[in-house]
Length: 439
Ligand code: AVJ
Ligand code: FE
Image 1: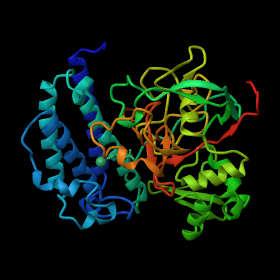
Image 2: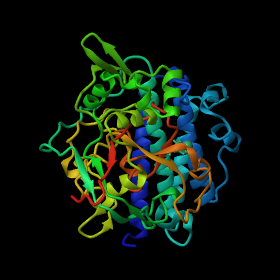
Image 3: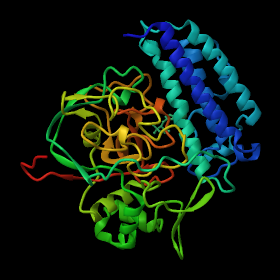
Image 4: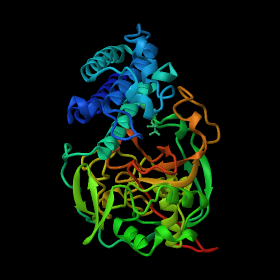
């Protein structure tokens, strides 16, 4: 380990502060009525997310790491996501906006006190600051969830950010060839990696082709206008049932106007930009598009190999561009922009194999069911990932414009139901290489 305890503590403190600044901004952007309202049955009231962030921080950092007395044992149950499904949360006796703000501030003060004294080695929960990293990631994950709630909210725009950068790569090939062979998937070293990313293990991957960039709105409109949503043969049985039952005919938030496709994005009505990755599509729509294109979705292992494998060293890197933490030059992360950036906007973020925009912009659906890697051990609690393992969840990779850099990396695994569209999810396509095909 190269970092001193002091450096680890200050890294953790900075990460916690950045997360809190974001939570504060997302909940200050609307008035109190808006904070307690449920904007969609799919989501919690924003004030629930805020106090839940504090509650998890109290449980893990104040009580568990710090061994301190509980602040509010009476509200543990209200903010336990497993006891109350999202739809029922508005009817609970939740902390109001002012109480929730005071609560999270009080927890944070205690957590910082714990951090100042916590040993950074000797106990798995705090090794290299893990618990602080886990709680930072938890807050950032809920911040992304709150951002999705903002997207579902009706009314005038309240969030503002500069437009994403323009495309600046030269012309890119449509696909990248990934040669057959093993690579190391997952990690045993990344200090803040969560349980489901562990351990590192070798995986054999057949040769395949992967789209250089995520599928853009322009490409998606071609599928749509070619009758993609009405052609049964392009859809899986489950996908067709979903499409039919909910009368899905375009990505969520899109509307057909006489002059083309428009969308609502954080309260702004705008023509759908052809050059940006498509976002707000379900797994089933991604699957149907891929069939229409004569391709398929990548497996999770294919995605990670394309992102991390360096053919020169045969090693797996932390990020597509190498081992350095993300900067604004590498990827569209951290809600710096309120949309995906055009395809080709991040040439410095390309992987060693030449695949672009794997990290940032849109979460990418993969065809893999969420499961533990060989040797998986739930840590520190089964409810982070293990209880979700199984065929009902699909893995998503790479993070979106709304994901913070602290909450995504080359090994990071997200998961959701294949019907979900309110998340910032898009996709790219893959196809098998011909037998014996080489680059
Ligand atoms: C990893 C994004 C699927 O939001 O449901 C938040 C993260 N776990 N609180 C989710 C999480 C507990 C989780 N995802
Ligand atoms: Fe949570």
